[in-house]
Amino acid sequence: MNIINPESCQDKTDEELAGLIKENTEYFVCLMRRYEKRLLLYLRRLVGFQNNEIEDILQEAFIKIFYNIADFDCRLRFSSWAYRIVHNEAIDFLRKRKKEISADFSAAEWQNLKSEINWQQTLEQKFDHEYVAILLNKLKPKYRDVLVLKFQEDHDYAEISDILQKPPGTVATLINRAKKKLKEELEKNNFTKV
Amino acid sequence: MNNITEKVWQKIESEKIQPAPQKVFILKHGFVWFLGTVVLLVSSLITAVIIFFISNFDWDIAHRFTNSKILFFFLALPYFWLILLFFFIWLFYYNYRHTKYGYRLNFWLLILIFIVLNAILGFAANYFNFGQQIENACGEKINFYNHLDTKSIIWSSVDKGLLAGKIFAIAPTQISLADLDGNVWQIKINENSKMAGISLNEKVKIIGQKIGEREFLAEEIRPWCGCGKCLQNSASCSTGPNGSFCSTGCGH
Image 1 (tube, chains in turn purple, blue):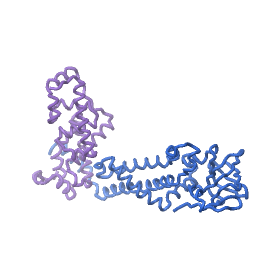
Image 2 (image 1 turned 135 degrees about the horizontal axis):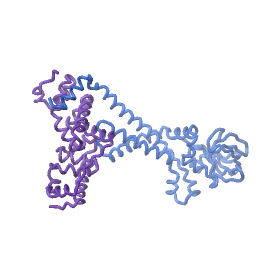
Image 3 (image 1 turned 180 degrees about the vertical axis):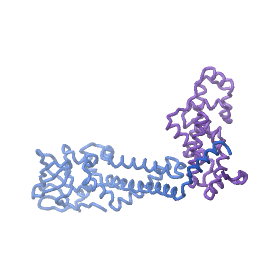
Image 4 (image 1 turned 30 degrees about the vertical axis):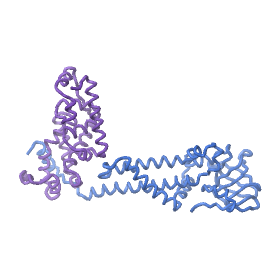
């Protein structure tokens, strides 16, 4: 297999690589290398499935990105566009398989969680804790999506707007509501503010 | 090469997958914009019909239904067309959301833009009589339209002295009329009856009273096009052997 040298892609932006694919499709390999780990992590945070299922979703998403590359518009960031396709692919997967994102919680797990999270701080800072993913599963998908993108994936409002295809104002409202819901979820499970 | 990257690239090579050509996307996005334009134009025609209805309200019959003109306004609104307009607003919104950057615009701003564009085009279409023509065509071509159209329902209230239909015979003191449901009525005319210049096959509205089984005494006969106001203007009326005749004053 004659694949383009990874070093030849290093000095190029994502958007430049996307443009070069029209001339040489092998540049797509560089984009996949750049995004594989990030997108896998995103999918894990978003849907929390087994590795093989997440990999299936990502493979299908990569094929779609490749097939639709001529539709990519440089007014968007490539990452936003790629995240959007991956997000939609994950939603389709959930719908087709009728799978629910669910996390089972035992009382002991909640007790562990309670002692490990300073939840007020995590809301103000980054959601970097693996337990938060479990809590997020209890929220509606629209709230979970924005929290994952904002606090775990570090996207700004404009990028989240482009990924979820919602107006920036709606994204801001959703994030505020999601934070409130998460607090309620914590309170419901007997978490107290530190 | 990473695991997934390798698998995907192998699949692309083995299945000879190629990126879709740009023209496919240009066509796709162009089609969405084309549909949006069609939706906007059709909704403007619907708005023209609504404007035509409202601007030709028969305010002088309001007292037969209610003492409040505001209540009569809400009673006589063309709900069939309004519901159709709301459907098209939704269609426009749905379509616009599927344009490439349609998601960026706030919902209410989008609706405001639609309403402004729709109102401008709707007034223009009504100015060129499209509202009246569409309304007339619907009344003639669509069987169930008379049961949905508020104006038809109001003018089928025989108990309130209102009757509408198409003239199919004219005699010196009597008119034969098929009402909006197809029932035949004999309309009596006397020297006190006021009439617009009526003719065979014309659709008319009649104010009067029921005097027998399928018999109606006409006090006033108006053209269907909603120009009842012209009959109150004595300058546009003249007296004939069988009552007063008035110019219809329809159109613009």
